[in-house]
Image (cartoon, rainbow over the protein chains, first blue to last red):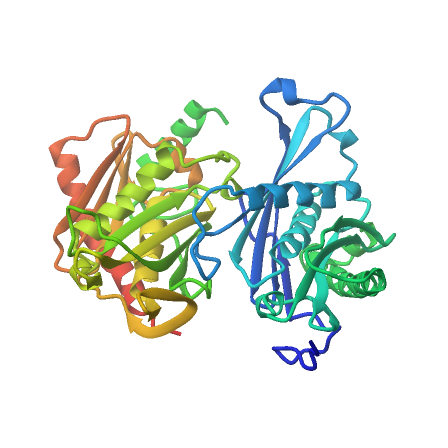
Length: 237
Length: 264
């Protein structure tokens, strides 16, 4: 049960290497690339644009519509193209993770589409997708109360660790995966899922670690936006 | 800009031998970039950028039963998705006509050129063969997705390695160094006609106002392996002949870009 050294020799509270960029898809209104370890996500935002069929329009507010999917070759065993129960659920929790950061009442009757694609998967894909999507929304100029930063925490063997890779997720002697998304400025949690087996105290410890990890991601997201838009982007966020 | 205004604008430029981005009529956008190994769980993958158009292709291998009518041949399955992420005009949902046509054009170029030596993909005749899944995803549609997709597909296949096979099952995640058995490599070029002008590699604005197109897969020895006429206007025999000549010339340029690519 003792997990004394991480499989890739990271510290227990250390995320994998992170790389982020915005403005990678020219035809989109906003877009972003987010890589954490060997997991690569891209996101594109289209909108606000007219929503059809018209009965779906809401005169009070714009609607956020997220679509998460993995490329067939992004995983070791090929994933059949097209939506799965898993991808539909992740699309939904992604929407819920991003919505608290947005005020779409400015865009009644419209839709903002967020498309997320996983190019390469090594655990933590929904978190990478959310981190990318938040940057893409900012890149699209959608007014945001805050960014959304996301990372997974969990328990591998007997240790609480930050940012599990696939090998840790599949750890034979037990592994609990807890994907978390946080709005860094007010610390509110907008995504929380858990699969595994942990004590309440361990969960608390894990969430504190997730906050630390998200703060780190937040810095990198802001830096990427700053690189594209200059210093002022930082103040607006 | 309305369809008619855009078409008039594009045609007026073409009449002067010019294009909106300053290219000649028969010039690809530059640079054309081929990046290999862009997705490491794939058995082979490539990203092609052609101007602002960007496409990913990836290959996964598995084993399975051969089709009953071809017991001593491996299986090739080509798919393409026009991701709504890559253009405001693409919608979510199962592959539509355009995506299906794209996949079929790429498939036929590979199949008819015999690029893939499918007899060598047999593990046990009639029972177990390698299945090659080639999937194409558009990342940014700035026109001419066909040529970019074909190039990405070929690049991915050329650099595909077999996964490890243990007791007739694939050990997922473990790659060998053995490459796919390939023969002659086809290269695909699409020639477009707008009014009476012939161009290649349209950007997304030009692409919208084309009248017809002819996609030509050209073999290593300059033969024609596959053709696909698209668009809703006709082509004369003379048009087709000169389009094929252009494709034969232009595929040499693309072939050189591909040939310069070495494994990482």
